[in-house]
Amino acid sequence: MIIRSRAPLRIGLAGGGTDVSPYSDQFGGAILNATISLFAYATIEPLHNGKIIIHAIDKNEKIELDADEELPIDGELVLAKGTYNRIVKDFSHKPLSFRLSTYVDAPAGSGLGTSSTLVVAIIGAFAEWLKLPLGEYDMARLAFDIERKDLAMAGGKQDQYAATFGGFNFMEFYKDDKVIVNPLRIKENYLNEMQLNMLLYYTGTSRLSSKIIEMQSGNITAKKPKSIEAMHKLKEQAVQMKEAILQGNLSEIGEILNFGWQFKKQTAEGISSAMIDEIYEAALDAGANGGKISGAGGGGFMFFYCPRHTRYSVLERLHKFGGEFRRFQFTDTGVTTWRAK
Image (cartoon, rainbow, N blue to C red; front, side):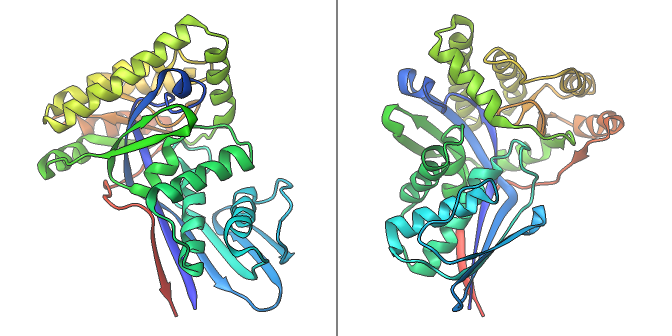
């Protein structure tokens, strides 16, 4: 018997960064994101030899350990180890023997929430195997606690909830890590038009998002007016984006993306770069009316909104930068688990 799990990656359409403490604790945050047809996968094969094998196929990393109640967090495959440690601590209360294989459709540091989505997928596989009573909020909160508290990895709260719930969601963030997920009911023709007009472009570079996030958090802690005001504007952007999409005012999407991009760059240094700026300006010159870097910034994926027939001229113009366009579809389901022989 093998147990499988799949969780979707996401693009953050508006409000990115307002889900990060201490901003969300002091002012409350709001984000609009959507899951796409790129995934993190996890497969568990139970073993009976007292061993644990963890294999990150996409990274070509593999380790074998003796089954124990707590695995060492030593820099190797820490997301998988940290998830296992919490599963044992909270649920099984005894060592487990298994082979865990993982794969993610996008590179780490690409801005699509890969780390958090992988944790959700691994939790999903354990939940299916051990029949754990975890609802969507439970699973997302557990993934958040593993990453942000157990492993002390800097970051926000949106990715875990996006991967668990799936679809288009307007998320609200409050103090004490309280999160409310509001699924959006969007007309099919609006979704089709957005999907046609939105281009996802991988710059070919990755970045360590934790450094940018730590800088953003530090600016809020230091009460720097420019950074705080920029965060306020990003929260406004999330509301603007929600209203535009629900009301079918899709021509406004690019303008709202551009509005947020200008303020996002003011929250911390390193979010953009000369290369990113050049790509962005080239896309606008070719007909896109807005876009942004996905995730914390500094590299990874960018996406652009290209109304009417401009997607084709944008595709042609960005070809010279040597990046890669990724085809995708919006997805309406979150983490999914199943069993196979």
